Image (cartoon, rainbow, N blue to C red):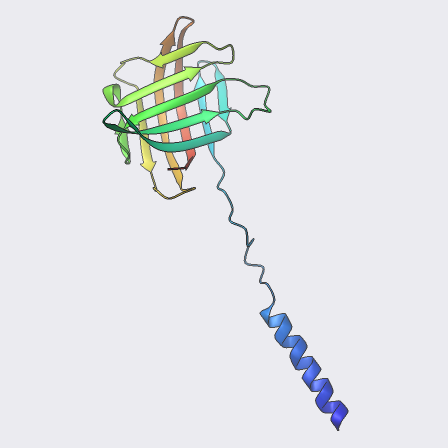
Length: 160
């Protein structure tokens, strides 16, 4: 009789331990979202893998900086910086848009004041690691010539 109660107690204890165990509902460590900025630059496709969004005050102007670059370990070089006047969703163009592009050879380009250039931000959560998304198209120029960026997509991670 005592063996029966002991067996039942052990089985109940095992079931309780299993029920309280970790579930497989996902990792317990916070996951950083994946970012990507992809764009056609003239005839080349650029895919930046390190993309972050920062809010910055430049003098008295509140701006958003979208920074795109390759990892230090990459053989690819260059970067793209998109500064927007403000910190919200919407379409930015002309005087509310400042672009700096550095190509793989170190040539620096800046956006032109052409009327077709724009950055459209459609999602802008202001929480750490929030995913900022949008699209863009513009022309940059520098001493090495000009580069047309077309069909650009933004998926960047908000930092603060």
